[in-house]
Length: 592
Image 1: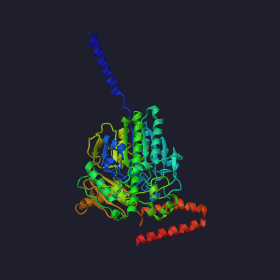
Image 2: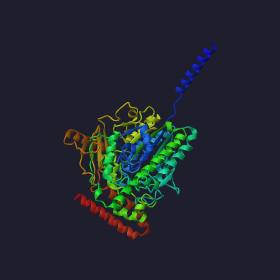
Image 3: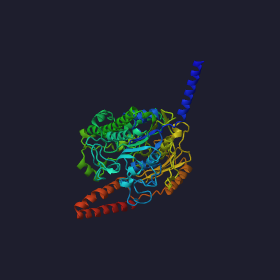
Image 4: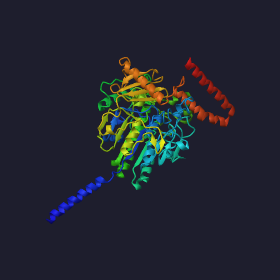
């Protein structure tokens, strides 16, 4: 009897203990957002790449890969939506400052910085008990009121421009007179042993470690500079890929397409175009092939080095017992970068004064490297287009989400997903109610995205209704997504500035234009786009607009002329007159 009573008592104790545990609130998950810069669709191993990315691939294996995820074709507009869930034309970043025409600057939605009417995910999480940290690229403003410490981040060490050197504290282009780094809202400087990916992860680890003692969950946003130009990496990472690209960009593009089909990311019968900007590898000399291959070896090394740093962050979280309670979101801010600044006369002169392009030094301190349009096409394989333009190669990037409680791991979701979906997803995972246009008694811009949690948990195959129209515009290139279809036009030289219609579920390479087969859909989606543009205040581009030409004007206005003004006012006046004449002649030629 005594033994039985002890058994009953023990059973009751276990039962009540279980009830107590079940009744106690579960700890909210930590959330880590990893933003790669300028990575093409197939630059990740789990998306078809030959580049070694085992740590990101582990997140993919433990989580869900989205094969149909879309951002914008340039960095700060994507980041503005990633931070707020609000369309970039409504949150202030209708274009980034460096490529915004003067006619647009200051108009509603075109301040070039994140406005106060768009509430960041950091603000919402911080107000609901989270530590909030950011390290790395910000590019959403660099005045006191637009820095992260005033946009919901408790700790921050950020680079405020479009990019900077990865080895030294200096700008990478004549767009800036210095590299603008800030810590907690104050100008900051980099250590002597700085390398961008290493430093960004180290800062994140420092912030996370310092906040562990109180037991609060954290939100950490890491904005990597890899693989933004200048493409630079430690030599041992670069040398891992010696010989890997000796067959050229066309062979690489085809190999990556085959791997994407094998992985189940794209349909087996999906077509693939050869872009007009892709060079003829076989026409190059042996020395030219060696140089071009080395450019891509450096690019692969930079991505590999970033992945290793992701692994270091993961190891730190595992050692602290926090990994199992951490949600990871990995994405790229836009497609692969086609620009070779040495092809831009104004930039070439500056670069030749500040950097070398010697083969044996590519990737190292003091050397400038980019991959150009031919390799960029391979990085975006099997898609058409790349950064700055509205083809899938510019807008479709890898998205990996892992660690969400109840999710089904090691899956590929073919659901259309959009960058504005990330904030609602994070808020749902964190158990924080999403605002509906009202925040703490203030009317704010409503979020437009949909939570991806039902897709992650296998409850739903779609994140958006098939009849929902989702618009896009940047620098005159535009698109509208609706169900499986995409209406798109891109500026020259990549596009012909005319509308085209594709089924991007079956034809992600945008090979078969359906406008003649589906005239009603073609017309109705144009009407949907016109409504999107009207509702969101999208401004038409001035005649003759070109993003690279605009970048040169920005550098002239914000860097070159101020220096000349300080040194020699007469020379400054003459150059102003010359610049004005060049702009007038360009506009006149465009109109004629």
